[in-house]
Length: 73
Image (cartoon, rainbow, N blue to C red; front, side, top):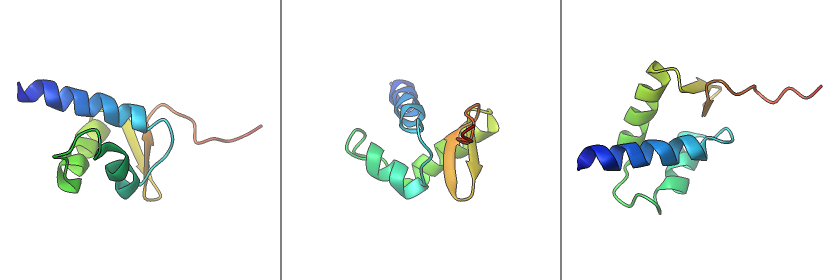
């Protein structure tokens, strides 16, 4: 059953990364939806998703990996 909770958290995290966010911003956004969430667990999930190529990290902020950095024409 723990796998279901982990997949749900991953889905919520990827949804929250619709915009660039810091670890603290992500934790604050997800904590009400996943009450037992610690920053350490969130960071471990972000590291795994980065390794899988789903999340990128730059300048202290996390974002979805395939998303442009917002360069306006």
